[in-house]
Length: 354
Image (cartoon, rainbow, N blue to C red; front, side, top):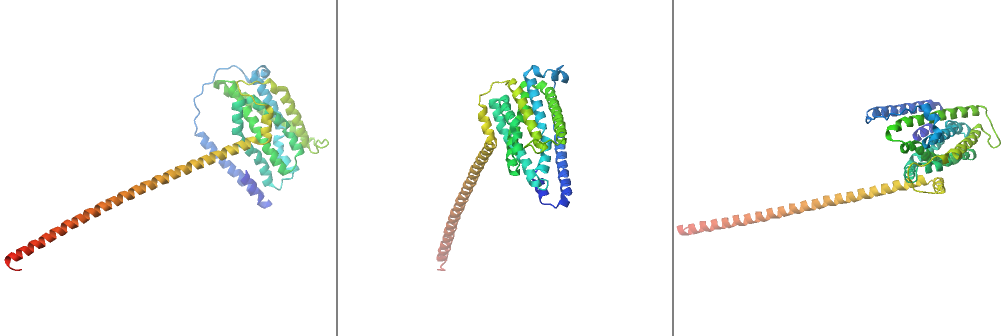
């Protein structure tokens, strides 16, 4: 994403079409390779449980059980979220004026995506410890009020900050929407009801986008809401907050969890605790890994040095032994030579030569 923004930032306007073409081709190749790799995976054998509940039956009984209320809440919240989502890029390009500054546009979009990715480990731990519903209540409230920031913050630098905040909020909220089904059903039923849930979320998204597009086509403005996008933001706040206050307290946890005050989690989100926690955790991991590698390296080098010294000592001992044996051999040979000379002299004396 950042590379695409940089590429578009430093090319001539006449070359923009070629850059976009290159981006689309690279994207296609990446997805094509991913699909090839995915096709090589094997699904484990699965035997679904017999269940006569049809989709229409599921929809008509949403208000009869805990999971039904959760899906209803998630669907209506998704409807409120989709009022803004598809038109945010248009808002940045046309209203904020980033049509000629693709790098800043990319940084704003990437801020949300990066914050979303970084925050997931944090939210996973929060959900495990304090429960999905508790996390849903906190992130749902913040998601309801988030569009107000888009109305009042119109500077690109400020938008980067609030989009980072958006990434944190929706990282937790979307994780809750996707995870609750795993606590509500046995594995045999999950696939079926996950499909029903996804269908309702998709329908809600569709109608949210259609309604938002129709409202913006009317070009409404009201006071400080001097652009149709700001009117949509105000409507989104009303829809989301109404859904939140009406339904969220009707959903209950399905397992025992620890207690934590909503205020504590909210303050943590507003102070970017998910990013800070993940960052420092990653730094600690890197430092620990570096320390481990350093100690291992020192031990390895020490071991090699010790082995080299031992080998050198062995060579020295062998050389000394060979030298001592050589000296002994020389002494023996010299003694034999001297004895031979003495014998020759003795013989010559007997013969009278000496």
